[in-house]
Image (cartoon, rainbow, N blue to C red; front, top):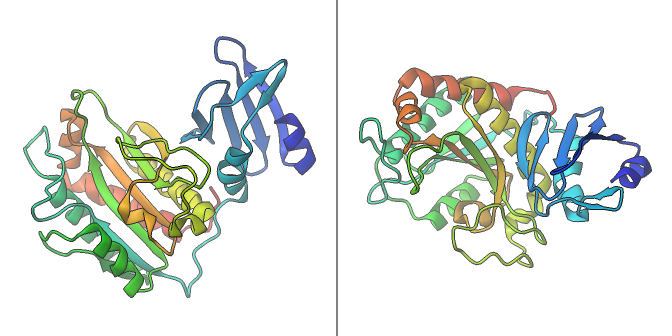
Length: 291
């Protein structure tokens, strides 16, 4: 890692701590990347990101997998340029709908499909006021097949695709926080598989946007955390998500909190809370700042 940083002139690598999980920081002009030996969890400017391979300590040198450097670190070093004025068409995808209700709220019994639609309506109004052209994959309680959601974005020639969801844990009600997903780059294992096959050699259409996917995911993830103060569960990679696989544009899926957690479900049920997160996302999409 020290040799890689020196060869590219991106900054210095400094050891932060010793055993049992030694940690290092790559300090650059774009941000600080903190990583640990034998851990898939890393941070970019205090935002969690999941690596494909755990860094290894060999002798006195720390090694990071070349694909993680190319697909995770280098896009973060580049930041995210502002969205061009001529490229401002976005498809919002309210998750679930119809016979697919999604997760159920532990607070009031409400369904994920209703919360995601409300979130999409709020976000649409704010983005339209800023000059965006916004399309929703559904505008009522209808069951839209996942493949049709992808085709819908293609038909509208969208510049960005954002799928909105809320989470649920089958292992109790203690889990809480925000997770953001983008497609796993070819060659890297996914952070989450949910018992689906995870063929690391598979190249999917949306892999053409690996760099932009991560940059967009990090910005939206940061915006959601800033708006709500929720726990950071990281920007993660998944290959099985149909709404991401076939996209011909940067595409991100947001899990905006755990409906299975009573305290978090109560906040999600608050319209002011949903409005606040929508305002922060609109601001982030307008921002010229880097990650």
